[in-house]
Length: 116
Image (cartoon, rainbow, N blue to C red; front, side, top):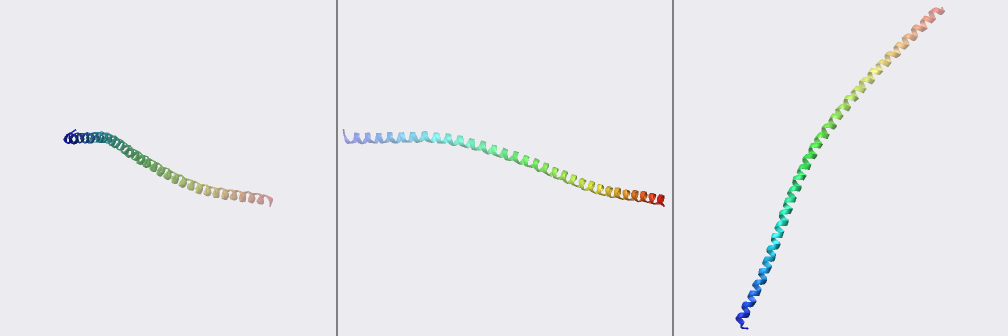
C-alpha cells in the first residue's frame, strides 16, 4: 500500500475517532442540559414552596401572637377582678364582724340590764 494511501487512511481513521468522541460528548452535553433543566425546575418549585411555607408560618405566628396577647389581657382583667372581689369580701367580712360585735354588745347589755 502506497504511503500516501496509508497516511490518508490513518487520517480518515483519526477523523472518524474524533467524530465519535464529538458525537459522544454532544449526546452527553444534551443529557446534562436536560438534567440541568430538570434540576432548575425542581429548585424553582422547591423555592416557591418554601416561600409559601414561610408566608404561612408568618401568618400563623401573627395569629398566635394575637391570641397570646388577647389571653394575656383577659388574664389581667380576671386578675384585677379577683383582686377587686377579694377587697369587697374583706370589707364585707369587716362589716359582718362589726355587726356581730354590735349585736353581741346589745345582747350583753340587754341581759345585764335584766339581771340588775
